[in-house]
Picture 1 (cartoon, rainbow, N blue to C red):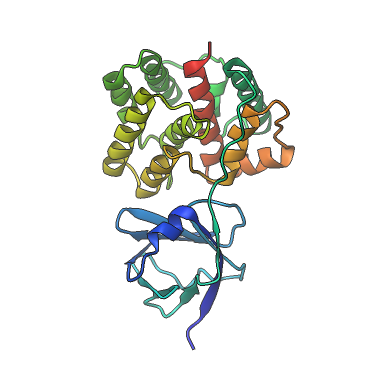
Picture 2 (picture 1 turned 90 degrees about the vertical axis):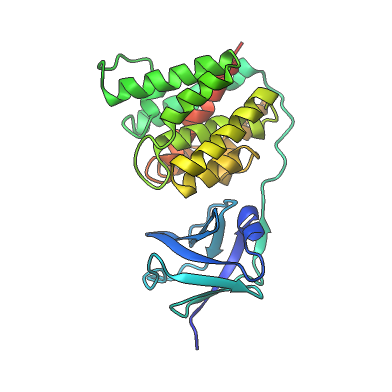
Length: 289
Protein backbone atom coordinates (compact mmCIF):
# COMPACT_ATOMS: atom_id res chain seq x y z
CA UNK A 1 0.00 0.00 0.00
CA UNK A 2 1.25 3.50 -0.86
CA UNK A 3 2.08 5.73 2.16
CA UNK A 4 -0.62 8.39 2.40
CA UNK A 5 -0.47 11.71 4.22
CA UNK A 6 -3.76 13.37 5.14
CA UNK A 7 -4.06 17.08 4.37
CA UNK A 8 -5.80 19.01 7.14
CA UNK A 9 -6.01 22.42 5.49
CA UNK A 10 -5.46 24.00 2.08
CA UNK A 11 -4.59 27.65 1.66
CA UNK A 12 -6.72 29.45 -0.89
CA UNK A 13 -3.94 29.86 -3.46
CA UNK A 14 -2.87 26.24 -3.05
CA UNK A 15 -6.46 25.08 -3.57
CA UNK A 16 -6.77 27.21 -6.72
CA UNK A 17 -3.58 25.69 -8.11
CA UNK A 18 -4.59 22.06 -7.56
CA UNK A 19 -6.75 21.57 -10.62
CA UNK A 20 -7.65 18.11 -11.92
CA UNK A 21 -4.74 16.58 -13.82
CA UNK A 22 -2.19 19.26 -12.95
CA UNK A 23 1.37 18.13 -12.35
CA UNK A 24 4.71 19.45 -11.24
CA UNK A 25 7.92 18.72 -9.38
CA UNK A 26 9.39 18.84 -5.89
CA UNK A 27 11.28 22.13 -5.82
CA UNK A 28 12.99 22.03 -2.44
CA UNK A 29 12.89 20.57 1.05
CA UNK A 30 13.21 22.22 4.46
CA UNK A 31 12.97 20.89 8.02
CA UNK A 32 9.29 21.86 8.08
CA UNK A 33 8.11 20.80 4.66
CA UNK A 34 8.39 20.34 0.92
CA UNK A 35 8.07 23.05 -1.73
CA UNK A 36 6.24 22.02 -4.90
CA UNK A 37 6.09 23.82 -8.22
CA UNK A 38 3.38 23.62 -10.87
CA UNK A 39 3.87 26.04 -13.73
CA UNK A 40 4.65 29.38 -12.07
CA UNK A 41 2.90 28.45 -8.81
CA UNK A 42 4.58 27.38 -5.58
CA UNK A 43 2.89 25.23 -2.91
CA UNK A 44 4.26 24.23 0.50
CA UNK A 45 3.47 20.85 2.06
CA UNK A 46 4.13 21.35 5.75
CA UNK A 47 3.35 20.12 9.23
CA UNK A 48 3.58 23.69 10.58
CA UNK A 49 0.28 24.95 11.96
CA UNK A 50 0.43 28.56 10.74
CA UNK A 51 -2.13 29.54 8.12
CA UNK A 52 -0.89 30.55 4.70
CA UNK A 53 -2.48 30.84 1.26
CA UNK A 54 0.25 28.57 -0.17
CA UNK A 55 0.21 25.79 2.45
CA UNK A 56 -0.97 22.20 2.28
CA UNK A 57 -0.97 21.39 5.97
CA UNK A 58 -0.50 17.73 6.93
CA UNK A 59 -0.35 15.78 10.19
CA UNK A 60 2.93 15.94 12.08
CA UNK A 61 4.85 12.67 11.64
CA UNK A 62 8.59 12.50 12.40
CA UNK A 63 10.70 12.00 9.29
CA UNK A 64 7.77 12.16 6.90
CA UNK A 65 9.56 14.54 4.52
CA UNK A 66 12.77 12.48 4.32
CA UNK A 67 11.73 10.40 1.26
CA UNK A 68 11.23 13.47 -0.95
CA UNK A 69 13.93 14.52 -3.40
CA UNK A 70 14.14 17.74 -5.41
CA UNK A 71 13.08 17.05 -8.98
CA UNK A 72 10.59 14.30 -8.07
CA UNK A 73 7.48 14.40 -10.27
CA UNK A 74 3.95 14.58 -8.92
CA UNK A 75 0.44 14.63 -10.36
CA UNK A 76 -2.91 15.66 -8.86
CA UNK A 77 -6.12 13.75 -9.56
CA UNK A 78 -9.39 13.19 -7.71
CA UNK A 79 -8.20 14.92 -4.55
CA UNK A 80 -4.92 13.01 -4.41
CA UNK A 81 -1.35 14.24 -4.89
CA UNK A 82 0.74 11.27 -6.04
CA UNK A 83 4.55 11.41 -6.16
CA UNK A 84 6.93 9.25 -8.14
CA UNK A 85 8.25 7.78 -4.87
CA UNK A 86 4.70 6.42 -4.35
CA UNK A 87 3.89 8.75 -1.46
CA UNK A 88 0.42 10.27 -1.69
CA UNK A 89 -1.28 13.24 -0.05
CA UNK A 90 -5.05 13.02 0.29
CA UNK A 91 -6.58 16.53 0.13
CA UNK A 92 -10.20 15.43 -0.21
CA UNK A 93 -11.20 16.25 3.37
CA UNK A 94 -8.99 19.30 3.89
CA UNK A 95 -10.62 22.52 5.02
CA UNK A 96 -10.10 25.68 2.98
CA UNK A 97 -8.38 28.70 4.52
CA UNK A 98 -8.38 32.15 3.02
CA UNK A 99 -8.02 35.53 4.71
CA UNK A 100 -11.08 37.14 6.20
CA UNK A 101 -11.83 40.73 5.30
CA UNK A 102 -9.71 43.32 7.12
CA UNK A 103 -11.39 45.22 9.96
CA UNK A 104 -12.84 48.68 9.50
CA UNK A 105 -10.07 51.27 9.89
CA UNK A 106 -10.35 53.20 13.16
CA UNK A 107 -6.86 54.74 13.31
CA UNK A 108 -5.01 57.48 11.43
CA UNK A 109 -1.88 56.92 9.33
CA UNK A 110 0.34 58.61 11.97
CA UNK A 111 -1.17 56.36 14.65
CA UNK A 112 -0.52 53.30 12.53
CA UNK A 113 3.04 54.40 11.81
CA UNK A 114 3.69 54.99 15.50
CA UNK A 115 2.33 51.56 16.41
CA UNK A 116 4.38 49.84 13.72
CA UNK A 117 7.47 51.68 14.89
CA UNK A 118 6.88 50.45 18.43
CA UNK A 119 6.42 46.90 17.16
CA UNK A 120 9.73 47.03 15.27
CA UNK A 121 11.45 48.41 18.39
CA UNK A 122 10.22 45.38 20.33
CA UNK A 123 11.76 43.15 17.67
CA UNK A 124 15.02 45.11 17.78
CA UNK A 125 15.22 44.63 21.53
CA UNK A 126 15.02 40.85 21.08
CA UNK A 127 17.18 40.31 18.00
CA UNK A 128 18.80 43.52 16.71
CA UNK A 129 20.91 41.75 14.07
CA UNK A 130 18.05 39.94 12.37
CA UNK A 131 17.59 40.60 8.66
CA UNK A 132 16.92 44.20 7.69
CA UNK A 133 15.73 45.30 11.14
CA UNK A 134 18.53 47.89 11.20
CA UNK A 135 16.44 49.89 8.71
CA UNK A 136 14.02 50.54 11.56
CA UNK A 137 16.55 52.40 13.69
CA UNK A 138 18.32 55.70 13.04
CA UNK A 139 21.96 54.71 13.03
CA UNK A 140 25.08 55.61 11.15
CA UNK A 141 26.26 52.92 8.78
CA UNK A 142 29.69 52.57 7.26
CA UNK A 143 29.78 54.14 3.78
CA UNK A 144 30.00 51.47 1.12
CA UNK A 145 28.84 48.69 3.46
CA UNK A 146 25.99 46.39 2.52
CA UNK A 147 23.82 48.07 5.15
CA UNK A 148 24.57 51.49 3.64
CA UNK A 149 23.79 50.27 0.13
CA UNK A 150 20.47 48.76 1.23
CA UNK A 151 19.49 51.86 3.19
CA UNK A 152 20.18 53.99 0.11
CA UNK A 153 18.15 51.63 -2.12
CA UNK A 154 15.13 51.58 0.15
CA UNK A 155 15.29 55.35 0.80
CA UNK A 156 15.39 55.97 -2.94
CA UNK A 157 12.45 53.63 -3.50
CA UNK A 158 10.34 55.38 -0.84
CA UNK A 159 11.26 58.84 -2.16
CA UNK A 160 10.03 57.84 -5.62
CA UNK A 161 6.82 56.38 -4.16
CA UNK A 162 6.09 59.63 -2.34
CA UNK A 163 6.40 61.49 -5.68
CA UNK A 164 4.40 58.82 -7.56
CA UNK A 165 7.46 58.37 -9.78
CA UNK A 166 6.76 54.93 -11.22
CA UNK A 167 9.88 54.69 -13.36
CA UNK A 168 12.12 55.72 -10.46
CA UNK A 169 10.39 53.38 -8.01
CA UNK A 170 10.77 50.45 -10.40
CA UNK A 171 14.42 51.23 -10.97
CA UNK A 172 15.00 51.23 -7.23
CA UNK A 173 12.77 48.17 -6.80
CA UNK A 174 14.82 46.27 -9.37
CA UNK A 175 17.91 46.71 -7.20
CA UNK A 176 16.00 45.55 -4.09
CA UNK A 177 14.54 42.40 -5.67
CA UNK A 178 16.65 39.35 -4.91
CA UNK A 179 18.86 41.22 -2.42
CA UNK A 180 19.95 38.80 0.27
CA UNK A 181 20.02 35.02 0.46
CA UNK A 182 17.56 32.23 1.10
CA UNK A 183 14.35 30.99 -0.46
CA UNK A 184 12.86 34.46 -0.08
CA UNK A 185 15.66 37.08 -0.01
CA UNK A 186 15.27 39.97 2.42
CA UNK A 187 14.63 42.50 -0.32
CA UNK A 188 11.74 40.44 -1.66
CA UNK A 189 10.22 40.11 1.81
CA UNK A 190 10.57 43.87 2.34
CA UNK A 191 8.72 44.57 -0.92
CA UNK A 192 6.02 42.03 -0.12
CA UNK A 193 5.40 43.68 3.26
CA UNK A 194 5.30 47.10 1.61
CA UNK A 195 2.70 46.00 -0.97
CA UNK A 196 0.73 43.89 1.51
CA UNK A 197 -0.02 46.87 3.74
CA UNK A 198 -1.69 48.84 0.93
CA UNK A 199 -3.76 45.91 -0.31
CA UNK A 200 -4.80 44.63 3.12
CA UNK A 201 -5.73 48.11 4.39
CA UNK A 202 -7.51 48.87 1.08
CA UNK A 203 -5.29 51.92 0.58
CA UNK A 204 -3.82 51.03 -2.82
CA UNK A 205 -3.95 53.96 -5.22
CA UNK A 206 -3.77 53.52 -8.98
CA UNK A 207 -0.04 54.24 -8.66
CA UNK A 208 0.50 51.55 -6.01
CA UNK A 209 -1.49 49.02 -8.04
CA UNK A 210 0.62 49.74 -11.13
CA UNK A 211 3.77 49.51 -9.03
CA UNK A 212 2.71 46.16 -7.58
CA UNK A 213 1.84 44.70 -10.97
CA UNK A 214 5.18 45.78 -12.44
CA UNK A 215 7.17 44.52 -9.44
CA UNK A 216 5.37 41.18 -9.69
CA UNK A 217 6.30 40.84 -13.36
CA UNK A 218 9.89 41.76 -12.52
CA UNK A 219 10.00 39.26 -9.66
CA UNK A 220 9.01 36.33 -11.86
CA UNK A 221 12.01 37.13 -14.06
CA UNK A 222 14.63 38.09 -11.50
CA UNK A 223 14.22 36.32 -8.16
CA UNK A 224 13.01 33.03 -6.69
CA UNK A 225 9.64 31.63 -7.71
CA UNK A 226 8.67 31.49 -4.04
CA UNK A 227 9.33 35.22 -3.64
CA UNK A 228 7.54 36.06 -6.86
CA UNK A 229 4.43 34.18 -5.71
CA UNK A 230 4.60 35.91 -2.35
CA UNK A 231 4.83 39.36 -3.92
CA UNK A 232 1.96 38.57 -6.30
CA UNK A 233 -0.21 37.42 -3.38
CA UNK A 234 0.69 40.54 -1.35
CA UNK A 235 -0.78 42.70 -4.12
CA UNK A 236 -4.08 40.89 -3.48
CA UNK A 237 -3.85 41.44 0.28
CA UNK A 238 -2.99 37.76 0.88
CA UNK A 239 -0.15 36.49 3.05
CA UNK A 240 0.55 34.28 6.03
CA UNK A 241 -1.89 34.90 8.88
CA UNK A 242 0.90 36.29 11.07
CA UNK A 243 1.37 39.30 8.81
CA UNK A 244 -2.35 39.88 8.36
CA UNK A 245 -2.61 39.96 12.15
CA UNK A 246 0.13 42.59 12.32
CA UNK A 247 -1.58 44.89 9.80
CA UNK A 248 -5.03 44.37 11.30
CA UNK A 249 -3.69 45.34 14.73
CA UNK A 250 -2.66 48.70 13.29
CA UNK A 251 -6.11 49.45 11.92
CA UNK A 252 -8.22 49.09 15.07
CA UNK A 253 -8.03 51.27 18.16
CA UNK A 254 -7.58 48.37 20.60
CA UNK A 255 -5.24 46.25 18.45
CA UNK A 256 -2.37 44.55 20.28
CA UNK A 257 0.42 42.17 19.30
CA UNK A 258 1.40 39.66 21.97
CA UNK A 259 4.96 38.77 22.96
CA UNK A 260 4.33 35.26 21.62
CA UNK A 261 3.41 36.67 18.20
CA UNK A 262 6.58 38.78 18.26
CA UNK A 263 8.61 35.62 18.85
CA UNK A 264 6.84 33.86 15.99
CA UNK A 265 7.57 36.79 13.69
CA UNK A 266 11.24 36.87 14.62
CA UNK A 267 11.56 33.12 14.04
CA UNK A 268 9.51 32.99 10.82
CA UNK A 269 11.83 31.76 8.08
CA UNK A 270 15.46 32.79 8.05
CA UNK A 271 14.51 36.47 8.45
CA UNK A 272 11.27 36.70 6.47
CA UNK A 273 9.20 37.59 9.52
CA UNK A 274 11.16 40.69 10.43
CA UNK A 275 11.87 41.76 6.84
CA UNK A 276 8.18 41.62 5.92
CA UNK A 277 7.35 43.72 8.98
CA UNK A 278 10.05 46.27 8.14
CA UNK A 279 8.40 46.52 4.71
CA UNK A 280 5.02 47.19 6.33
CA UNK A 281 6.64 49.98 8.33
CA UNK A 282 8.17 51.39 5.16
CA UNK A 283 4.73 51.55 3.52
CA UNK A 284 3.49 53.70 6.37
CA UNK A 285 6.57 55.92 6.16
CA UNK A 286 5.76 56.56 2.51
CA UNK A 287 2.31 57.95 3.32
CA UNK A 288 2.67 59.34 6.83
CA UNK A 289 1.29 62.88 7.06
